[in-house]
Image (cartoon, rainbow, N blue to C red; front, top):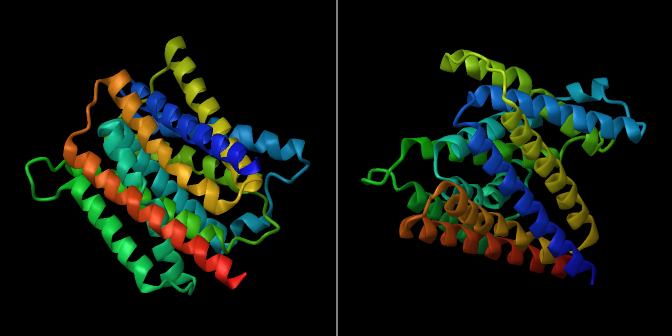
Length: 290
């Protein structure tokens, strides 16, 4: 029963993230992407700082200057900036399909930098998954969209974040980490505005409502994700992360009139299948060693 509840929470979390992406994409039609990034970062930092305060945790400490935390925040910065730009400038299904390669990037990073053992089967799955990313991007072909590289940038940055998180000191709570990670998006968004020659605009009431919707969906998705991972078995719950792609396809079609082509769907299927195999293989190895 716990695994069922956890799986439903994971699906809800992925739906929340997909709806957050929808709000961001809609806002990007009328507001500078850098401004959206800064507003999301500032509001997210306030939300998680408030949560830390309620838990009587220190919002700031010198521990947050630890090299692993700094590197994690840099990964968060690169990843979030890349993915937000991808959501704003490319079809939602395409950006989300590429994002599904994140577990493969984390497995690769853990093998290369953390010394974790990865057998030939998982190396094969990682290779096939990356080929799936190339199918989605289709470099050198007529359907190639250079802006899709932004989603790859997002995956690399978020992969760095997730790998380095395993080496962050345990004394630093998730609330503190999240507060600092969101806070760094504020100056990053402002710098992006300067680089793109954009000027700040006062959001309209409707834009404020969309921004609030993005923040609420993002925070609720994050909390549902944490609850799911704590409640159920990782091997049973993690595969439901891939429902985010299905949600993105439905939202892209229903809200933005985006219909993914067969190549994008094929590439997404290859990525998801490779990721699922990697997760199943990892679960089997853990059971054997237990």
